[in-house]
Length: 92
Image 1 (cartoon, rainbow, N blue to C red):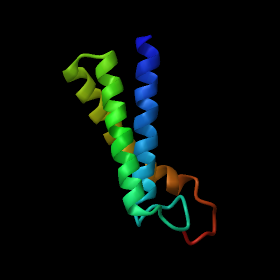
Image 2 (cartoon, rainbow, N blue to C red; image 1 turned 180 degrees about the horizontal axis):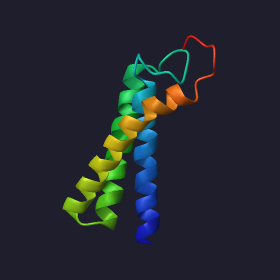
Image 3 (cartoon, rainbow, N blue to C red; image 1 turned 90 degrees about the vertical axis):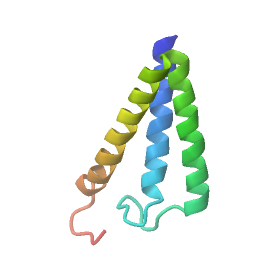
């Protein structure tokens, strides 16, 4: 049961970090970024849901540490994925 909850928490944080990246004006995955206000609301809901799921599966300190580490990893990796998978010859 705990492994399913942790997987759900990781997935929620992944979707939230992806939405945060896609709302950035410097993102390279789409031609235009997502609208900022709806994306911020969605990111907040997903982040809180992820943190809540982590606290259901882990104790408080471990949940916050795991959530923070996962978010930091995603926010570093997502921009590089945009550059790595960019079609060759494209400006963006």
